[in-house]
Amino acid sequence: MLELPVIRQTTPSFHRTHVGARRVYIETYGCQMNVNDSEIVLSILNANGYGAAELPDEADVILLNTCAVREHAEQRIWERLKQLNPARRRRPGLVIGILGCMAERLRSRLLNTGLVELIVGPDEYRKLPQLLEQAFAGDRGIAVRLSRVETYDDIEPLRTDGISAWVTIMRGCDKFCTFCIVPFTRGRERCRPLQSIVAEVERLWERGFQEVTLLGQNVNSYRDPATGADFADLLAACARAVPHMRIRYLTSHPRDMSDKLIDTMAAYANICKYIHLPVQSGSNRILALMNRGYTVEQYLERIERIRSTMPDCALSTDIIAGFCTETEEDHRATLELLRTVRYDGAYMFKYSPREGTKAWKWGDDVPEEVKIRRLNEIIALQQQISYEINQQREVGRLHEVLVEGPSKRNPEQWQGRTDTNKVVIFPRHPDVGVGSRVRTRITAATSATLFGELVEILPTPLPHRQSTATLTPSEH
Ligand code: 5AD
Ligand code: SF4
Image 1 (cartoon, helix red, strand yellow):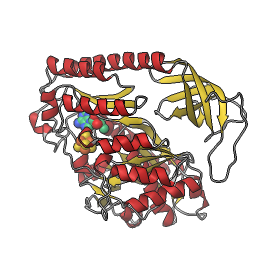
Image 2: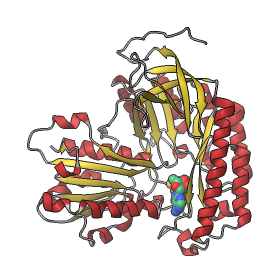
Image 3: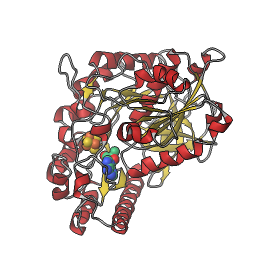
Image 4: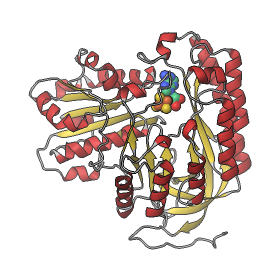
């Protein structure tokens, strides 16, 4: 999964709760699944009478939903906990809780710090109301059992924005990549029923959402528990149920990236042509050590199949620099793979040993300065490639963009995303708002952002809203 900036989650519907209700403030770290999990937590607490706090200082409960995938992610949480600690003096009785992967990994070790009252792992969120009651009565609480069945399928997440929704379709991971803590913090793989996912997506469309991202650690191994329908079947069922909704998914494992899935993506216009396909390394020796289950050649064959079926499909990946025993030759093989594939983008990390994983026992023998140098070389090369791709392929091109809101850098500009998941910035227009679909012509680009001009405001395919004006005649 991709790591996101910290998200402070509150939701408008939360404010309808009664006066005098206890108020909760939640901060989300890590991947998109954590964002959706926080929405599930908000839903559970809201149903139990909790209201929302806009700021930690106004809250009776502060929850941090955490990530444990790298040491750095955990460091940020420790710093945040220390920062929050003085709030106890201002708000006697304040309960601070840790949710998510770090709660699962560190368990009672977290309680012993005295910085938190509550530790709740990813499969125990239903217990939160009860644990909070205990915490208010002065009892510190911990619930970290992992489940083989919990999917929170019956809980409608309290979503935080009205355009794009995360929909978790499965939880856990059975792949056991040797570097990864996720199978230990999120447990065994389990899937929601296909029908309930399709029904949720339909409800989101009715409420005005324009885009859904189906989430799982490895969505390609999705199976409907009753019928055995696979991920391609689920994707097709969603695409048919809401033909004007943009449908995305995260994350794919190259080993399970089937021809059927590629063909299904190609067959439906509303399935976005973007695949995040983590490769991790360009060295077969390292891939075997990582237990990834494919060789570079097999991976490249999948890329070929994707590109021959969907020439315009954007691709991104994850790379780990400095995995244990990685040599200069292995590193050069990774650089070579980046040159061969020419990804649109990549998420690049230094290897971070995680206690309890298989690779932990093999040590961390690549010196820090070597890891940093290799990571910097990988980043520099990928930035150059992304820049070239954007200059050569994107400038001059027309893109349909779903508008997400004002640009973060310059509120005078709108920001949206292409079908291929690229960010486009373009000047504001009075008839364009959040959720509008527009056609833009790309006029300039950096390695990470496209800049465009508005060509046409497209009809907004909402159940209730009607089409809007055309600026200039459509070029298609
Ligand atoms: N060290 C560095 N990166 C890691 N990832 C997972 N575990 C580790 C680790 N121990 C990266 C992988 C994965 C992404 C979500 O995080 O690249 O695809
Ligand atoms: Fe971790 Fe590998 Fe599972 Fe991804 S597929 S969550 S990297 S174990």
